[in-house]
Length: 119
Image (cartoon, rainbow, N blue to C red; front, side, top):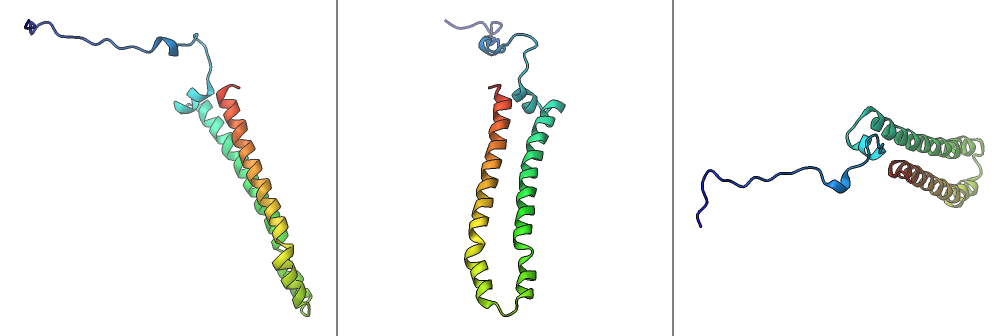
């Protein structure tokens, strides 16, 4: 049966019914996806907390490693002390600092996801 050229199929589309929410429903994820001012504020707060953790780790690293040249200059005859401090004494604090930083960064991200997912 041939179709009349005047009769064409028309596809009607609309938003899925399950995706509709009650009016006034607030989702932070949509704010971030749509790049609104509020979404920008959420992302900026995550970036600030991550920057704060990074700068704290950098400051502790600077306080830990920075005075070592002064210590070694003050004790020129202590070659064994230099090797002991650099070879053994510095690694444990660096590992602890790295572990603290990774845990802090993961906690910041977990808090952000919890905020965005409304959990």
